[in-house]
Image 1: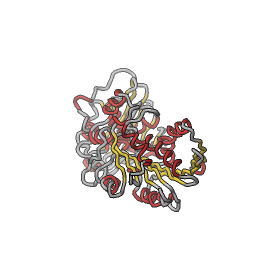
Image 2 (image 1 turned 45 degrees about the horizontal axis):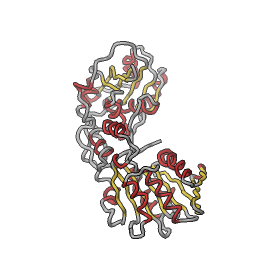
Image 3 (image 1 turned 60 degrees about the vertical axis):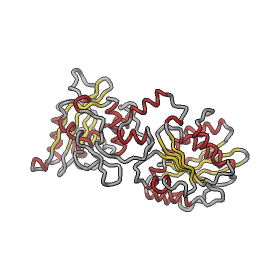
Image 4 (image 1 turned 45 degrees about the vertical axis):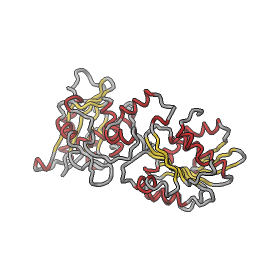
Length: 413
């Protein structure tokens, strides 16, 4: 706690300089750059110094992620500094005392457009929005509108998204006219990070994610999604010897192609050893759920399949597989997080595509970002094996089988 970089010290002291006219502070930049902790500490120091008997807001993508990513690290440090606090979890309320002042901190989650109603009606002396770029605009604007107490200020931190993102356009580019102090952070601004850890983060990302999470740039997603992957260098033959576990991932399709991937685990690495791919448009006919279930049995080929991870929208096929005796898990279908996790596992060679998986390798060379929509999303083409691989990667991270995966950023529960 005693070691702060010059930029972190500026965050800690910006509010106590009488000559400053700032009404808000914005900190953005690289992951693990020290902006969240220094901003959280500064927010509590400011609030307890300037107010007594007031309400303030603490906002995260969800209340669970707010507690985990900010409060779990910050509250023990506040206690060491002489703060006392008690938390009423059922009310999402934190009551803090310091220097004879007592204030109430209301916890809010800005998950979607309906979240704005949760904060509406509150009167706040200040608000901190952790990961503001991940919250809907309506929620952020409602939180700002609640700060009507004299002397109230706004506190924002976030990791970069695309350059057309509303927060970048309306707050960062207009910081001066909004009277907001804007500070851009890099990993070098966090003295707690060793050179080895910094190097690990630099290796963990590529392409657009490297530019955003390591360089801290608000940059557009463009080009190949897995631009680091080389089909000649990064594939492998199916290894000899026994596999410890088997799983199958499924992207279900009737009019669209269906893709099944068979994954085997050996020595801590998961190999995509075989696959099935059926394109009804190309073949000129569609398969039923029963026929797809027979294909999946053929892919399993008598192996003991631990579970089948299936596209969550394929309700009828999930029921068919369960009746056939398979253990089925509904896939986590978060595209952006799934791509980041998959890229991380591929780069760390925690998952490896074997040379016989022709359709997966074909799509790897065609899977591109959609530059037309203004959002971070891949084109909806050549993406079916990519989807089933993404489902598998998210399943590994969910059950802890994938090792370390730098998913970001959004820091979901």
